[in-house]
Each structure stands twice: as C-alpha cells, then as structure tokens.
Amino acid sequence: MATPHILIADDHSIVRLGISLIIQKQYPKAIIRQTDNYQGVLDMVAKEDFHLIVLDIKMPNGSFQKTLNFIKKKRCETKVLVFSTLEEELYAAKYLKAGADGFLQRQVSEESVRTELEKMIRKTGYTNS
Image (cartoon, rainbow, N blue to C red; front, side, top):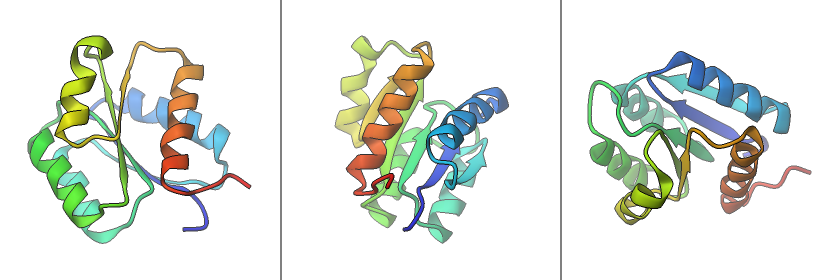
C-alpha cells in the first residue's frame, strides 16, 4: 500500500474525529475509514486491507475478541491498536495476550497518541518517505 490505510473503530464520534485529525497531521495522504460498531469492522476488514485498525474494547453489534480473531485470521499483517479508557498498567497485558499489537489509554497526551500510531504504522513496514 502506497499510503497508510487505517480503520478507526469506536462508538464515540468525537474519538473517531480526534484520532482522524491526529493521523491526517502525520500522514496527510492517509486513507481513513471509520465505524462505530463491531459489525462495521467485520464488514470493512472483509473488503479492505488496512495497515492499522484502532479498536475500542466496548462497542455495539459484536464482541471484541471475536472481532480481533477475525481481523487476525483474515488480515494477519494488519496491526491492531486497542484504544481504551481502561488503565494501561492493569489491562494492556490482557489485550496484548489476546492478540492486539498495541494498547493505548485514551487519557494520554496527543504526543503519546502520535508516537504510538507511528510505532504501529512502522510495524506494518510502511515508511513515511
């Protein structure tokens, strides 16, 4: 993929908007898709190849683990960054063990979000050059 292709899956529109703005600053040509529920993730992953999926833990129309398993089976190269209100120190290991590639607590700074997004994108082999 010539430009980063990213899916933001969160049931809060303000979160999707905020992450989209951060991504657009870093990767102006990024292709960004959004959904507010797990079924939307499944539908999009079935049709499109993503570098990165920013995934909320609690959304309607499905379950986190089933969705994560589908992503990893269908698109094994896609990286999944969990973006949650849960405390990273207490919950990150659980979600990483479940198959996520990264975990980020929502209450972190914009700089931390940018750094983690960059780290996840680099793991896909994409370079911003």
